[in-house]
Image (cartoon, rainbow, N blue to C red; front, side, top):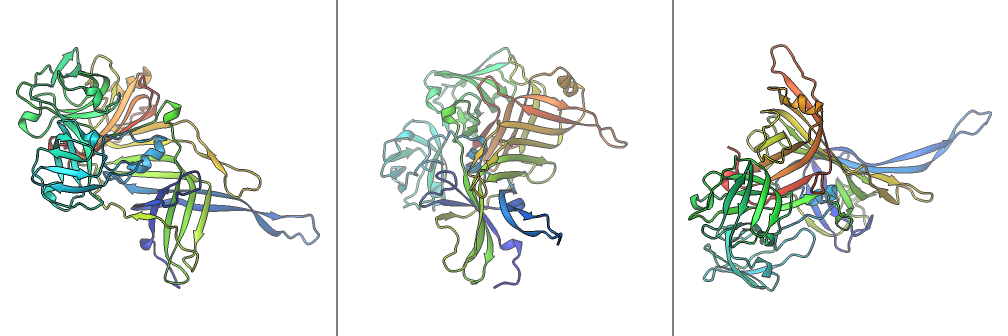
Length: 510
């Protein structure tokens, strides 16, 4: 038995429960890489007997309650929080076609054939059957089988691509994910009415791509003939019809432009948003496992668990000149421990190690942070500030434990409103932000992050502003702190998270 246990040998993992406090038969444990913990574990409440007695002494108390909760801070990488974000949004991710979906069984890829440029599986590939789909192949042992591929055709058991492939029997890590579409020559164009752009097509049916209102896309590819000359960048969808997508927020100034002689590429990804329809609102619960090193036997690991843990608060921290990081907290029903001794070992299941991805930094990986007054006639309204020193975006679900007689801990949890807020400290340049507060203007707030051909967006399309008291200090620039409170917008949601599994190099911050 060790005399002490250092924090560096601990480990954190989570598994989604089948029902509250109950794991599936074979749970999947996903490893995480926390920077620090906050109030992780259980706190027991004891109540002593204090009778009227000449000795004036209290009697030994008894345990009357258990409060279980936990939180941690973690660096934000491309994929380490996607599963858990579903818990904070109380919704399933809206994924594009993939062989490795988040919430259903994977399609196992069995072969790559060089001569026919084919990826094969026993079944499950028919949804890739749309010529021009852009697919990210990853997890293959041969490097040439990974990367961005263009679908030529597909059947239930094959996906044929235009790019070179190499013979391979892939491992279970291999997967294909739709990340965009390439239009046929001269099919896609941009028309502008006032300052509102519309992407039009003749052949491509946009309603077949799985896009939704509020989702963001990136217009343009790296090859010269895959981008417009002017209309290149991120754009948010206001409406979708078979041959027209109207945008209400863009990172580029739109101009009417034909795609003559060009095969324009459009990139899109996984969307998670708070849903307004009851059937789409889903409460998830988790087991959180914190391993604590070897126990009494020095052969098996001891650990503590938060059981029936429901996602409560999430805060995205965007400080200056450092890493992007997030604080996550959970309210749980119970807290248990295992000693690592014979018969008292960690819970079984499939264990997936932490991804070990690079973190995003706040110096060169932030494409845009923008807060602007909502204007239905202008997709590029002026920002209320030019530069930011720090920003936060927060979700609060107001989860509370339900207590009952005969239950130590909680038998269930209750959920409050989906509360979204944000804060920014910006360099002051004009009084526009302060006027927006006084006018109670409708304001939108979004942050776009991109690096190494991937990225994500957090978008709060409708907020009301507070704060605004200027900070004026000698020998320093004037700063303005702004507070924001999200509200349900016309499309029925308050906040949306867009994860791009692939972005072209031109989408990286310059």
